[in-house]
Image (cartoon, rainbow, N blue to C red; front, side, top):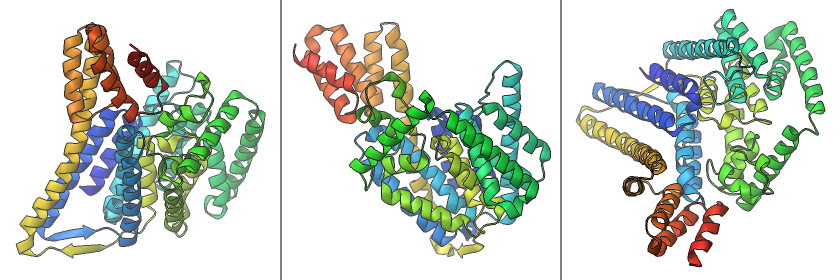
Length: 455
């Protein structure tokens, strides 16, 4: 059951736009929590619970705790919390997968390959219908390329050469130079395992990639990346210990780059710098050190995908997409040996432990559900607001904020207050002050607050 649960969540994350949308992310997290609760309670009742590898669990737990601290103290905590939840799901896969036995791991790999086939078929359909760079079911071709790098070694280990060929063809369609450089570098680093043909193919691909990179050095694409990397470095310098919070890069970027529309970006396009900017240098160091300790003794086949994805992450943002990050964590966790340990639960303690487990996971699920419900109410308010149904929109926004306060909801309530009755200036100003507190980087909120305050 555990392997099927992990496969369903990771595969679902890939097929639902990389779990980038809050609804998809929330639904998959709820599935994971419900499945974990059922599995753990069943194991507790049976009196025998497989245990994850202790050092791996401690490492993942430390990272999850640091991410939660960064989200709590973030200047944009309302945006950091969902990103933190998504990253904790990925980190939780390390101890979960370590508790899966050999048969379960084989099942998990089959499920991931099935997801790979689905991605290839969707991309082929898009290509046939005129999409030059098919993104498959992910956000865009670059995110798809990151997923391909992780799925390729899974397919090669199973000798599913048809899937390998399909994934390589899709990688060619994406035209992601960074992904090809990641693949080439991984082939060069694993020369003995991949053989001379693959090694020289990697060398050729790497040479072509370097030429392509040199040709793009003065292009807007390269110059924008340099600006984003510089912004991420300055963010990390401003808050080196805990960063600005998970997912904060997009919201803080305006304070670190010139006000030019073309420099807007959701991600830093550099995994290490973005990690340091959002979670601090200690987190980034612990994350990379743990991955090195985990992957270094693993077989080349287990190491290949995560290494290629990390190299790709030096110039692109695929690992910032939740679905791809979950696939990365599952792939890296498969490199660790299974723990092979289990704990016996005394009969008299089983009801209490089972109840506490269900309550803890239920509390986590309730938090996710409240945030998702608040988002749905905000979306509904936006819809009725377009139809000028102001009272109904205000009711929906108030209900949304009772579940989870949000700067966008506060701003909309201020606009409704000004549009419905001009004398509600005080209410509008109060809503705008809340919006500025929750998102201090959005200049339009501050400008509107100043305009309202002058009335």
